[in-house]
Length: 104
Image (cartoon, rainbow, N blue to C red; front, side):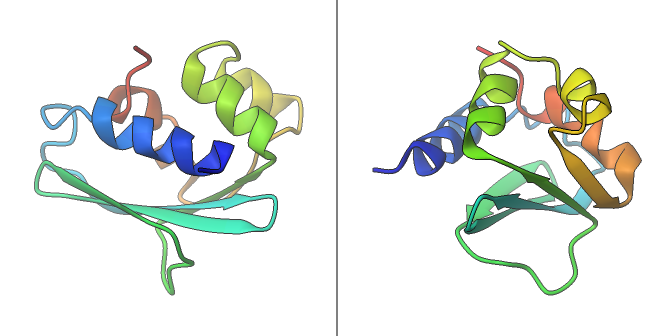
């Protein structure tokens, strides 16, 4: 299993349905040459290995940054400010990711 696939598997396991109440958004992740998206709707989360046609926000980063942010080793906002994460679309949604997928 690829490192990226493992990170998304962990994200699915850590998903906080309570934090997702009222959220109906699609988070696109462009990780190196892999494309993933998380559909968060009605307190549920589905993570799919593919590119979405109309994501709410798209986050681009390398696999190392994804791993560091999702493990809590690196703060997502700091990584964004340092240019390690690029965001397009509704950038405010990116700030919700730490609530939706809390670090273990």
